[in-house]
Structures are given as structure tokens and as C-alpha cells.
Length: 310
Length: 310
Image (cartoon, rainbow over all chains, first blue to last red; front, top):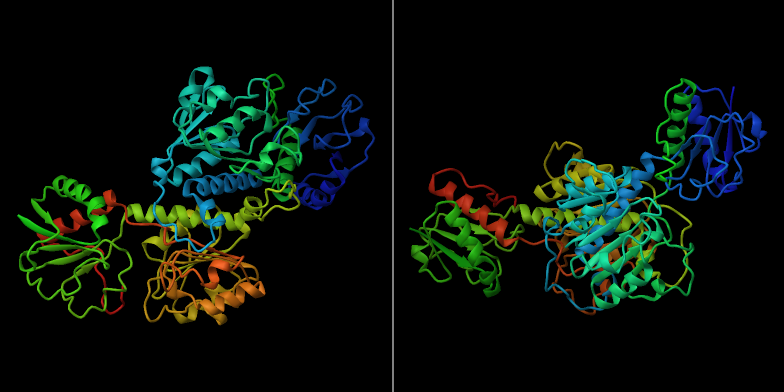
């Protein structure tokens, strides 16, 4: 019998209990799933950073902590966490992100807002957008999400550049990396998509200097993490026309305060951290698979490098 | 020397002259391109249905009429046209249509308008859309445009059904056809995309009865031809909630009159016949290729079946 503790918000329990039980049974695991096992009896923790467990020291025999979230920046520095920590890499989350990123990229590429807002009887047919093949896109971050979004944008015809901290080689994506590759990745980009993890190195990556490298009238799309952007610099770039529009899903403070300048800016679309989410059915299968690996003595998938922070 | 007459609007001449001359030269054709050859000297007509030529009888030695438009319903019944007529099947037009259809399908799928309109400080994060894999899409029309859009929507994960007049078999698309397949194609569809040619058989294809087959709250996207829809029936379906939103790019009368109910309806987005257009650079190459075939005695590509009307 494997004891799995579920430590997340009460509403998560309602969403996840059945999918987890189903996934464990399908994987042939004999699991006792509960929200309140005694800590010293817990084999695995299914974990959300906003759940009840914040001190991992009592979990003396726990083999791994399985995050339900892809972003682990709020737990990675927890000094009591000595157990292996796995990020969520969920096919459902990835697919949802591809849909959201592709949709908003096309929305800006096609200039949809002109028509969505302009239902006033004026027949605005004077110009066509360029084809996607003439609209360079840069994706900041080439993890599972960045790569998947890049492939779909490539299939639509966009020339796709990707930037990551360390060198990567990904088919169909012009890959650049590190400090040396940063300026080349951003220079003349017409759409920039932020899918980097939040680390001390990525904070304010998009700032006055880097925003200035983009093509004039570029679009910024941020489904990654709020601190990737220097907010004051972005607002200035929006005011000057250097950035034509920003669609932002994540913020330093969430919910974004009602009096934040982003809400009022005519060239900003705020979306409420909905770009994508872990999907219980697919995420439960990822967790079951990782527990099977742990029980068989295989290395866990999607382990977080505590030094890198993701 | 091959005499090619350019018969379209004056602004088309500005867009097409250089691309056509380049494409002819690249194809090794010795062409005299002009807007006013004497009719009896013309070998080929590059033709827009809204251009000056309406009587084809004086063009006694003309080998083919090459339409710049994909839709030929306004010329196909011209009794003076006895020469072969080729439709435009332009890679640029196809790619533009894929971008527009994919963009608006994702816009409705993701519920973007809620956020585009809702920049009022309210954090509306209560629900996620289903994944595309749970959102069935039906494409009415499986010509070059319908097939290309279907493939892209399939790659995004949507289950795609396609309907055509005559039987077709297309990978990744559940193909239905004819009167017998119509109800099955529309039943429970959540997004319907109209890419049929305009013929007597397709007029009012989307009417009170067929709209009633869709899933409640479906989305209708029409980048095809205005008369495919019974406008009164669509407005009634929008009022009842049977159709949640319609994005319409084509209309019985264009520009759509300022007092038309579509402009005022809160659940209709009118776009001004901009979904896609023939792109001069790619279209010029298609025309050059077809002239080469004609000069070599090969059958023309994309010939219109005058009885079918497309």
C-alpha cells in the first residue's frame, strides 16, 4: 500500500480525487489517497504551492513531491524541502497553452481587435495583414511549453526564433541562447511570447533596453510569469508606440489590482491567469506514471534542478 | 510573343504588373502584358470579375481566361464566355485563409472576446474552455481552402468533420457528403466554417432547419459567400442562443449596408471581406505556370466546371 498525501486547495480535491484514483488503478498502483495522512507515513505528496503543506521536515520517509503546477518558483527555495521535487509537465496544460498562444498570436497578427471593437457600420477593408511568413515571432523560453508553441506557429508559417538560457537545438525553430544570443533573438521580432521560468536571472528580462530591440509596433504576449516584464518600461513602450499591444495573463500581483495602469491602458489586454491550466485527467496520469517509476527505482521525470530553479 | 490582356480594376494593375512580369520572365515566357490589347490579338486574359471585360465574343483567339479570384460565380453564367476559365488557387490566398479561419476559430473556442471587451478590472478566471479535442468543428466545403483549414484545425487538436457535395476522402478529416450526409455533418457541431462555392444548391444552406442541428451555443464563421446563409434564420438563432456568435466576412450586399441588423447585433462580428485575398506574388506564379501549360498543349490547371459552377 502506497500512501499518497494530497496537499492542495479544497476545490482541487474535488477536481482531482476521481482522476487520481482512476489513474492509480489504471497504472496498477495500490494507493491509499488522502488529504490527511500522518506525515511520517507519506510516500508521495501531490502538491500545489498554495496548499496546506509548507514545512516538509515531518515527511521523513517521503520519496518525492509531485507538483500540480508547472511553475515552482514559490516552493523551490523552501529550505525544508529536501525530497525530490517534480514539476508538472502535463500534455493537457501544454495543449491548452498552444491553443492560447496560437490564438492570441493570430489575433494580433490579423488585427482582429479592429473589427471586434469596430462594429459601427464602417467597412474597413483597406489593408491586408502580411502573411504569417512575413511576421517573425520570438519565443522566450524553450521548455515543453515554448517548444510546443513554436512548432504550431511554425506550422502556421511564422518564422520562429527561440531563446533559452542554455543551448538548445529544436527542429523548425531558430535557437539562440544565453546573454550573447539575447539581443539577436529580440531584434526586429514582431511578436514576442514569454514562456520562461521565473528565476533571479529572468526577472525584468523585458525592460527598456530589450523592448527597444523589437520591431516598432511589436506585440508582447506574456503567459509565463509576471516578473519577466519591467512593467514601467512596458507601459512606456506602449505609450510611445514601440509596442503596439500587450496581452498579459500573469502579473506580479494576482489578481491584478483594479487600479493598475494595465487595466486602463487602451493597448493592453489583461487576461486573468487563464492561458492554460493543469488538466486533472492528464495530470493524474503523469503523477501515476512518476510514482510507478519511483516504486521501480527508476529516476523521476521532470525533476526540478533546485539551483536553476526549474 | 504571347499577348496577355490584364482586365481588372486599376488598383489591381498597380499591385500585379511587376509580379506578373517577374513571374513570366522566371517561367521563360515572352509575354506582351497590357491593359489594352485589341481583343482579336489576345492569347490569355488575366481577369477579375469586376474588371472591364464583360463580353468575351471579340476574343476570338483567346486560349484561356485566368481569374484572379477564387470565387467565379459572377462570371460562370456569362453566355459570351466560351473560352476555358481557370479559377485562382493561390497558395498565398490559401495560407491567408488558414490564418484567418484558425484565428477566429481559436478566438471563439477560447472565449477571447470576454477579455478583449472586459478590461474593467474584474478578474474573470472562473472557468477554462475545454481543450480543442473536446470542441467538434465542421467545415462546409472541402476544396483547397476547406481542406487546408481542416488540416490546421486537426493539428491544433480539434475533431474535424468536412462536408462536400460529392464524395471526398481527406486524411484527418471525417468526410461526409451530399444531402444524406448534411444532417450528420452539422449535428452537434460547436464551430461551423463555411467555405463552399456559391451555387444554386448551396444558397441558404445554413437555414432555420440546419442551424437547429448544431450544438446549442455554436459558433458560425463565414469566410465563404454571403448567400450560403439565410440571414433571417441566423439572426433568429442568435437571438435564441442556439448560435452563440457569428463572425461573418461575406454578405449578399457588400459593403454590408450601415443599417443591416448584423452591424447592430451584439453577437455578430462583421469583417469587411478581408478573410483572405489573392496575393500578387504567388498568384502571378500560378498564372505563369498555367500559361506555360497552355503553350505546351497540356491541360490547364484549376479549370471551372461550367455546369457545377466552380
